[in-house]
Image (cartoon, rainbow, N blue to C red; front, top):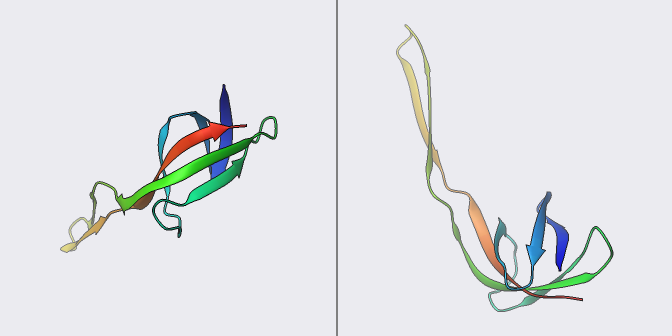
Length: 87
């Protein structure tokens, strides 16, 4: 059985036992979250496993013939969730 949940402005298809990386949530590690299934109204429980930062991406912009160059990096913060049950 699967469910579709929404968090951080995105929708995720999840099953029991899945590990999911979502937008950073301001919740302590070990806490349990409850989401509502968008398809049939079931309740999905997920446990916060960890917080972290994603792989670094480099943004390089330049303007030709003007000697303008700009380098910028970004690491997106995330929260890892473990889906514990769908009821």
